[in-house]
Image (cartoon, rainbow, N blue to C red):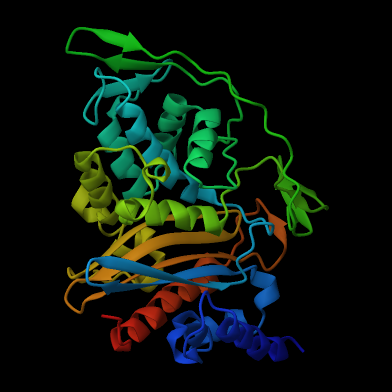
Length: 380
């Protein structure tokens, strides 16, 4: 019975795109109709995987850039756990925060009070994009505070969003920790902690998932409740990406308030491969945090293909938000997607089909759209 739903869903994609076009222009629908096993396995049982995808076709007419968005099952009311993809807007907002004082910059050294790890803001942002480092993200949360993150994104028209906790150890402490800032070699300053709003339970569809979860080595036989977790739907994540890659297409109040130098640093960090940041290429191969196109291979990414992205993976959910460009073949597009791979329905047991189903699906989805983009006749 499930297989009969797929042609109908794809037909809807062909009919309800953002504007009326030839059906063959909807590359997302064509990619999802692929007979490749990595795509077909998911599409034949689509309800189980809670897939959401937004693809943006990019055309250029003279000096104008034109976006055309295509969606598959994108619904901000259907919750998915964003995992480390929340680090993307946090990193950009940290750059904004650096502009609010003359005493700190990208290369300023600092540490969290009570911690022994020293870092710079530049180092932490690079760690976030190259290997998705949790502690680097959490230090930026201490700098910003949850309320400031949420409010600043909303002011830019990026919503709905709710950042409620740090990552890794999931601290929900409402008071940020002070940062000890090195003002020079012999002088330090300290940031003022902020008290943040206690999160209210999210009232969304699919906020409770599965049939059980592990807590303190015990199986709790009831759905896992995500209502107090972070919330960053595909729609909001894709808007962050558009503003970062094409800031001049947005009104001034909708843009991130970062300098041109910071913008170039951010773009470089987003596409930097782990090996180019000093990490062991055997452990952190090119596709380690580049799920689309290369996530299922340890081969090197060709130099003419750049992927500006942020991934997330936790609780069986994989997410990638990416701008992909091929300078050799004049191809560029945006792609955001999430998939849940948790066949047994148990959370916190670390039994998820990331390598068997999730990453192969995202990798092939990226390749399918890239191949179609190579053949697409672009507007001029």
